Image (cartoon, rainbow, N blue to C red; front, side, top):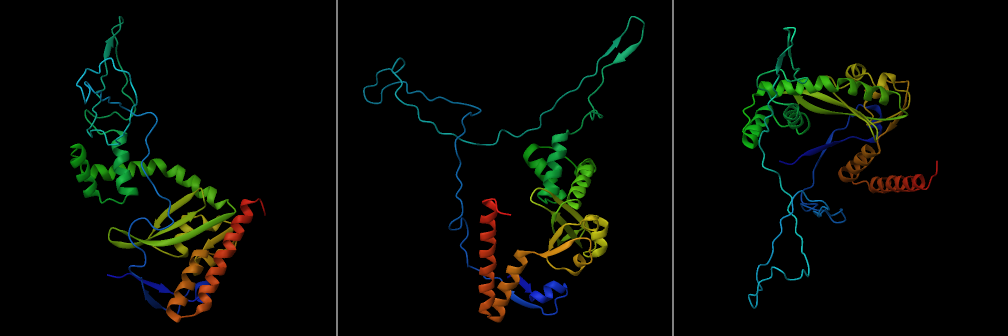
Length: 301
């Protein structure tokens, strides 16, 4: 099924209320699959310090059959194989010993923090569960099957949910610090995109710079959600966004429209309305960016 894009004119982008809705089918077969022409190639390189070295010695001459035990070494050819180690759970047993003092009191050795149950999964397992579900977006049930298939670990969906919740609470202070730094910065990129939470449409609100990214999920898309996220109401720099009306309501900052959105709209106008000036304007914008980047690289203001 082809994916269809929605385009609106630049003045409609600025108002945040597109009145003209047209669909342009995504073009199929424009680029071949795999590596694209001009893209950086990648290959697997050998490492200087391998974990294991296996030597293969010739025991006798391949022509006369004479023993090569004391023969001189002429050359060594190396080939390396990178592979996963055998995957299994590593069980660590913690033993708390109790000693009786001469006074009669018995003192027990203290278990490490977090070792609470007779048998439990450790922090690396919980981190792996959270990574699969929160970063790779693997459903909980499939994550449970992954642990069973790869490790033979019969974890429950409830354990995975609790692991995600525990890590969520642990990173909350860091997320708050990121929000504070973004709000106090000079430049901010803001966007919002749809996502599904328990089968219902929600919105992921993004605030970012080159070094920091803040993600927040809310049931609303516009101003109510942005106020609750709490970054834009405090921001006084330059906010770069797609022209959504809700962004324009923040008057403590300056506003700039996203260049990628400019190019997207120009492409839509050129394809649907057959306006050649739109292609020319897009090329001009790309040239301007190239010249500006080159100037900054040379130290210009």
